[in-house]
Amino acid sequence: MNNELLRPISTEEINIYHRDGVVPLRGMFDKDWIELLNKGLNVNCESPTERSRIWDKDDAGHNMFYDTLAWREIEEYKKFIFKSPAAEICGQLMKTKAVHYFFDAVFVRSPGTKFETPWHQDEPYWSIEGYDACTLWMPLVPVKQKNCLSFVPGSHLFKSVFNQKNFGELTGNPKDQVDFSKVADQEFPDINADPESYGVVSWELQPGDCIAFNGRTMHGGSGKLDNDTSLKVFTTKWMGDDVRIKFRNYGMDPDFSSVMIKKGLKSGDRPSTDMYPLVWSKK
Image (cartoon, rainbow, N blue to C red; front, top):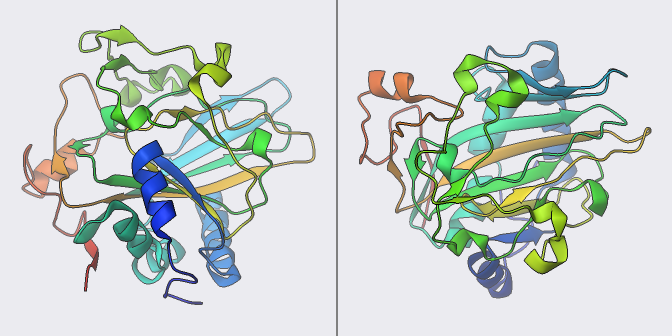
């Protein structure tokens, strides 16, 4: 189990990340890390946290399981966060001096699930704000291009405030309600209607690969699984130098604000405390 980078991140990959807001990274994690996360995911699915949700379930029983902020309860996740090269990968991509951990989220689709992730941006849902926010989307099983999360390159630079998807409509949970209608200046574009015009990209991936993307990059569409194909994804969210806490008055998803306030954090602060630990800093 290697905590060093398996290979250097190239200047071209860093430039693509900042130009497009997303970049695929091949061969970044060895098989031991994948085995560890699969073990942790099995524990997670058997003993979900109170934050777990079923985003979709059809009449045939196909479903998509989601859980978040489980790292405090699952030792395998905790070991990955603090010991794997993930934080350094994000630090090098973002070109930041320090990287704090934000949160984890898992997405597990049963074989044959057709449900697609609605198109959205992440930052508008979060209790933070800043360009230096990076997600690593890590498949724990092989992923075909048609099943992979898709992205609109360059959308992290869009200035408009879009009317994002209310994921509370999927879960039916009152804690998940987020209403962007009063703050949005335009509707979210219908990307599925003409993906070519938006330059939508996705990739075929193997365990050990990952996709790194900016919290402002438009993404969605993973799913559409064949009957013999499942999808297991572990994601981690990381924060760099310019990120500050921002409590939003239209709801947040996931909403950790009450816990953050108890930790003494408020809007405008740098994320810190044991809730958002410093994991990597530039030598």
